[in-house]
Length: 430
Image 1 (cartoon, rainbow, N blue to C red):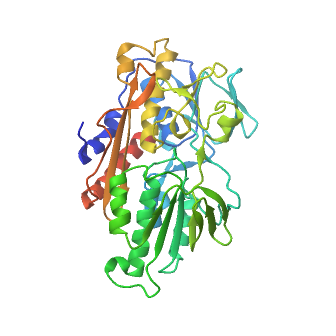
Image 2: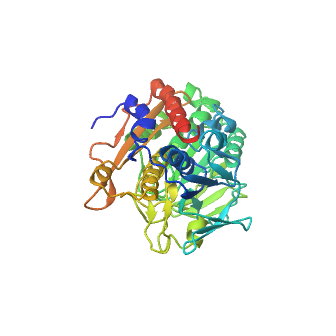
Image 3: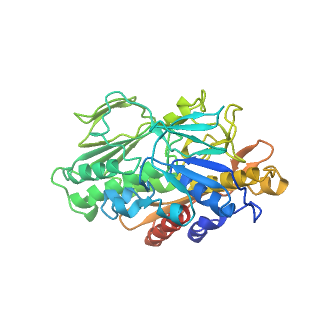
């Protein structure tokens, strides 16, 4: 299977938006509650209403008035985008598709009584519940996120990291950590390292061929994994050639503790200090799933990928999609959008008394993860992977030959990156 830049632009909403559901279904009186208004939650809410012809009632529970996209948020760091450019409210979901919005935080799932407890102490009953709550971070000794931002959930943290980078000296040191896999957006940390190196390299003059009086700036990348996790060819060339005088990449570096006040991080490969620390803690399923005992002994929620229903009889009608699910598929906004459609299709079928295990449906369950990564201020690369349901293993597996990346970063990819993201934003929120 051969992939090109154009193939990736066509993936949203074409392949990812494939409807398996027979047309004309309504499922009147079935109530679906969706928790979380990011790429997974907003997509499933929208497509449940569309594919049921408005017959399924959908309530979206989300504490924030808008979702701020992590996708493209690294461009906030170099000033090419601002958070309002990446903020999406729920007006279209409510007014165009008829989704009821409840601005509250979910606290506990009562599987036996099929109710959701909210922070306001209200309870919502459901026939189906879709949990799309993203990630939470493991605690790290000494880490103060107000001093040491992760900026891995876009918002105030993103602006904080941007401001810290702006305040760095021209020959300063930026130290970032990458958590143990799986984590949200596999190429994202390496992309961030490139953009910070680009910012500092141009500011200091190093990338313009002029010497910095205090020496070149440094971007130290402390990766808990044994090597680069995505676009290995691309990022090795970026780190060792394009930014060879700036970036220092160190694998197998697990964080022991952080001194946020003095900007020091202690790892299994030594202690590092910098003018700015960007510590990204290890990820896990959010507290709602842990407290409700859906994750069990797992870090993520075990689900059946033909529906995304949780793998326990104690929670009938409960589904988990997006970053919280534990199928082994990449954790990304594009993938969350694709999983949401598989889940929506299943719920519409179940609400109408139809099977979700027909031959035609099972052979067509496919998801994909695609992204563009800015490498410089005006050039980008791309990555794609396609996953398909394997009826023998009952798991989602990588389609042979579907894992692809661009041969090089260039300005055409950079332009297409904006078209790709706008397609995804529109398919999710508009």
